[in-house]
Image (cartoon, rainbow, N blue to C red; front, side, top):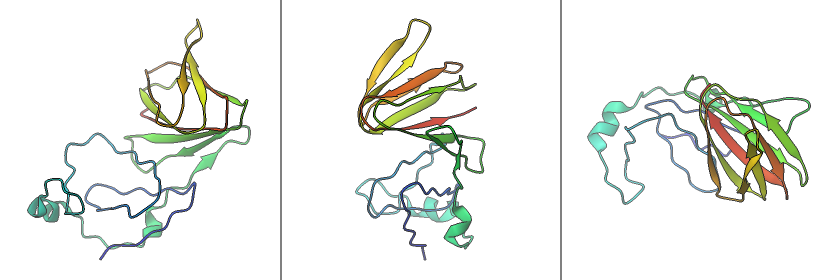
Length: 163
């Protein structure tokens, strides 16, 4: 009924509207387009709406490999880009070694970044304002704001944006 997919570190899949999913174990970074239609089917104690769920599914059977998002990397960068087949968002994965830094040009739209590993800081603005980052830190970055990330320890940050 459902595909069982085991992803390795660095792999990504994209599931469109009407395609159910559940996580069995492990750590993931999930990015979702703006939505008010999450429909639960019974794997949580939260309210369930089975008739609405059944009406909203696509019922298209495809191999799970059709959902893979191929990451792209830049030769001189610590960034991996995950660009799914929708215009709603792109996700950057930033992996810096201790003492490393990465400057990012301004993006036309807003973004949200979350640190998942290590320690460091993000800098922005002409006066060099900064904010400390540790696992669980979340930062909103306004449109057209260039930033730089600096690692005090190995630092992993995911940044989702709309361009």
